[in-house]
Image (tube, rainbow, N blue to C red; front, side, top):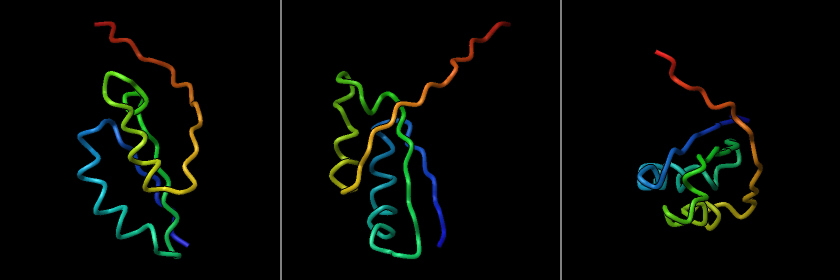
Length: 73
């Protein structure tokens, strides 16, 4: 089995990912998992996580805390 972990930064990625997802989601030899940025869960950007939720029947949201880096120049 091939495991694929993909990242989507925002709603502009959806049109890029959709053909890829559609080709792989019914392939039993590939395990596809996505990490979505916070903007997908933001009302201001249209709750675009719902698009991924429609595509993946087993969609689960897990909160991952990432340490924010600050530029100190």
